[in-house]
Length: 174
Image 1 (cartoon, rainbow, N blue to C red):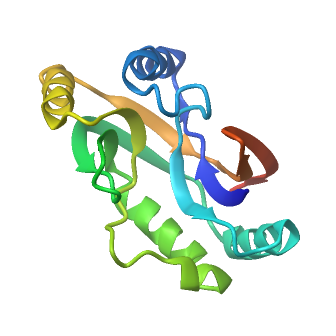
Image 2 (cartoon, one colour):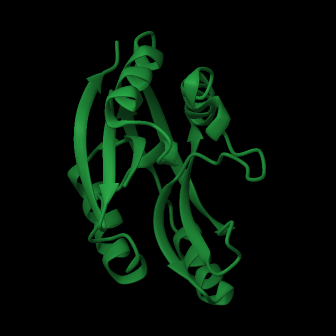
């Protein structure tokens, strides 16, 4: 069992459908586990549920909601080096995500901060062991006029166990 903080973006139904239709084909690893989201605090298991929730709420208190725009997809090799991810990465709002991530890792979560991988705010949409499949998919998305606009107005504190995400708390941002 692990705990995370994620942000489910508020986006149009059309964009949500585009992402989910794409993920159903290309994200077989996570499609049935979690809806499109940005991960803010990555899975950790070294806190009790109570302590994780308490620390997350403490760090989230002063966070304001923010807008974002996504205009492109990218490829990222998984830290395990076993496969590749296809990400939708925000153009606008990128720094807001980074600052949010850094704020949440500024307290008791600091010891869990990964310095060996870059934090890239993203919505995961696909994955494959074959980088050329990911490259073809990303090039196809980027050849179109992609524009996904949204807002991050809540953060969810979740538990991940047995390939199931359970929301423990949803926190409204100011």
